[in-house]
Length: 106
Image 1 (tube, one colour):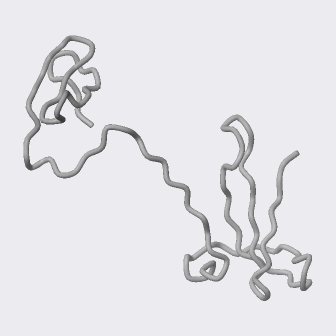
Image 2: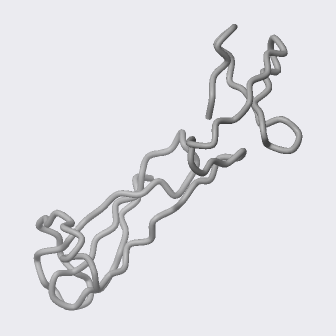
């Protein structure tokens, strides 16, 4: 991402992707070769936590009753799975049997 030196607006890649163009004021500047790789669209990655890797990933533990084996300890993490104006969902992974369940605020 590059910002315009003239007006401060975000610049976009021009045709051929060899220069930057400001939509606000029309200022253009060439791309320097030492900038490295870049993209013109944002990419959002979602991380899926592998249940067997819960301990290796350093997930915190809490007191939670496993509905499968009755164990009283679980790893936990939170993830936004609904719209942004709703609360996150808490996921639990049993430390014994690795059963996974979630807790929603409804």
